[in-house]
Image (cartoon, rainbow, N blue to C red; front, side):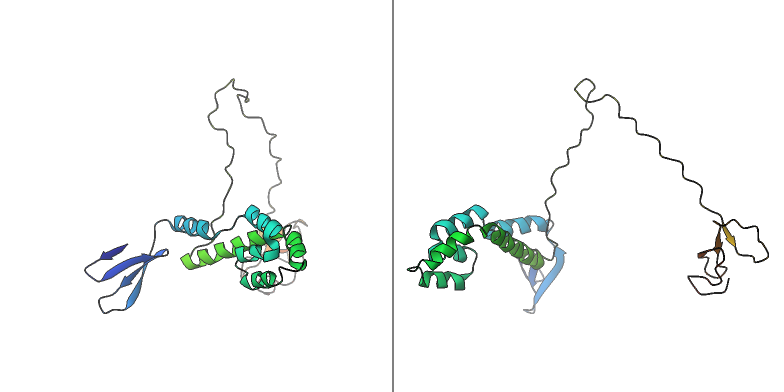
Length: 200
């Protein structure tokens, strides 16, 4: 899509619009496409590989190295093709058909990471739908009222924060002492603050 503006020529590539300035310099716009995830999925569907196809290629055409060409491993594909007249690539192709699902997943993950990096987004993840029952009329097999949950246990109140006074010996053993400088709480009997090191 090529559009001519008053400031120059604009063309859209990737997730960002690239503009040709009036002086001939290339300027990248700072405004991304509205939905970069749609661009990601479109490009990902063009480069992704199928696990079943990889397994079948390794099983039936593994001696020729077709399964390596399928995953863009041309060096191994050529090596297998050179030795296709021996039984070794055929045996290896049969063994590799069991490893193809993992290799295809790895290939797809690398492609997804590359596309996402080119678009400047994180890799979109698929979250399965959550099964939520909302506004279900009574008598449809669901309980009419929500189940009663036990009451939360009552926790004791937090100990009071007091400033340590050596003359006050009536402090409880679980009472905390607040530092006068940084207000960090310290246990009774501490001589220095654990936060600032000030003498208590």
